[in-house]
Image (cartoon, rainbow, N blue to C red; front, side):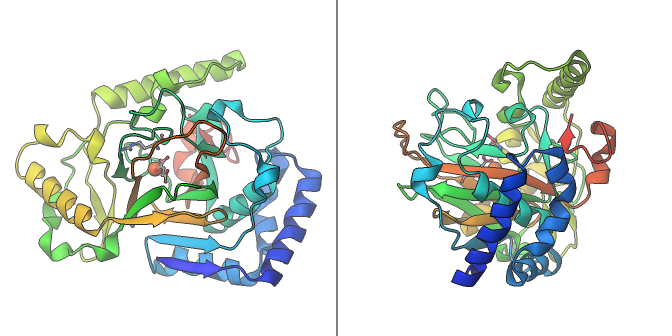
Length: 342
Ligand SMILES: NC(=[NH2+])NCCC[C@H](N)C(=O)O
Ligand SMILES: O=C(O)CCC(=O)C(=O)O
Ligand SMILES: [Fe+2]
């Protein structure tokens, strides 16, 4: 793991910058803020910029964590019951701005029209009724390790998780490519387009929120859901590994891959990889203020089961997706600067 801890002066500088920004903008989804974010991110402390730049370019680890950001538990208030319950102005706006600017040092933050109402800033919190679901909002069941949005050709390069609270020390799990003994894995077959990955349930229409959108957006949204359903029934075959054969990038989500239905040698190759990933999987307890970025090519992540409280003190994370190449998805976005993939 690649780690840094903010010192007192850096925290003061961050508070000053974020204070200035939140005087002007009341959400990180404000169009002008989004346009200026890469410029504003230049004003983060140099050690933070340098840390994230190294993480991006030299790939020292599959996971980077910046700790030390103080979280005012009283100001952020209780953990909402649902991601749909977002306030007009987020109680955690200051933290979100810092988190968003850090993400912007790695690339461009983007969202999905089919996930959390198209918002860029997601909430990860346990939702009553989702306990047994394979969702970020689940709790009782193991959240299987996965590449974030593995099924989608426009998946992000990084997934950011900012911990606001985690009173029971619930464990995120990570397995980093650099810890995998690649010589024990059937790399050759995993580089071949023999595998399909179905969309995870957070993108399915059943987890759609009811929202009012203009008719032209509704049309795009319907088309986006139609594509998700199509990917669910007839997923395209793709490789699991890419890049360097000795130090590969990974993209897999075994829970949605119907491993048993695969033919040999694909099945054996994937089973072998799943086994070694299980062996190197490690728990990471995110503490309040931890700003974590998982390299979505160099690590998979999940979450261990826990018992939700539903009393306002539940574990609460913010989540963002970051891409190094927004242009890749231009055909699925409304304009060159728009951040939402339909
Ligand atoms: N094995 C999986 N991919 N599970 C789904 C992961 C959680 C999903 N990203 C969500 O937002 O709820
Ligand atoms: O809750 C966590 O620690 C990870 C959640 C996650 O992987 C997700 O929401 O996709
Ligand atoms: Fe995830």
